[in-house]
Image 1 (cartoon, rainbow, N blue to C red):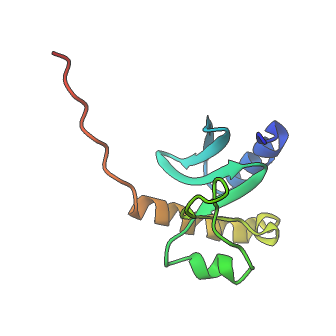
Image 2 (cartoon, rainbow, N blue to C red):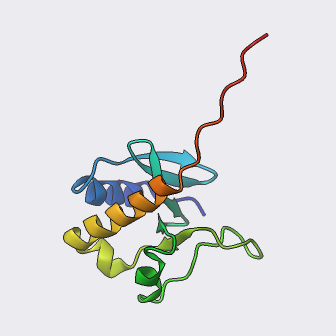
Amino acid sequence: MPNDKAQIEAWMAQMNAHTPVRTRAMFGGHGFYAGDIFFALADDNHLYFKVDDSNRADFESHGMEPFVPWPGAAPMGYYPLPTAILNDPEELGVWMDAAIAVAEANKKPARPRKKKA
């Protein structure tokens, strides 16, 4: 199911109160960027933040499980953001900073473009 535009706008407003964020529609969902860092995604009206070993336990302590894009697919490195965190502006900022740091640390270098012949 596609994301509700009003929900995306609400999340943008909440996150922009902490860090400038932009969004882009992609693969039926939405990607969230801080600058050029892709740190969150929305799918089926759920918001997921980027995780690795540095912040995974925070999500798991709230009972969150990894994002699985479709049944039988491998889990991805994103976990749903707990509602309690989303509703607390200060905590949201802390969790955003952690997700942005994870995404930045794991960012793959851009591939060089081929020159036209």
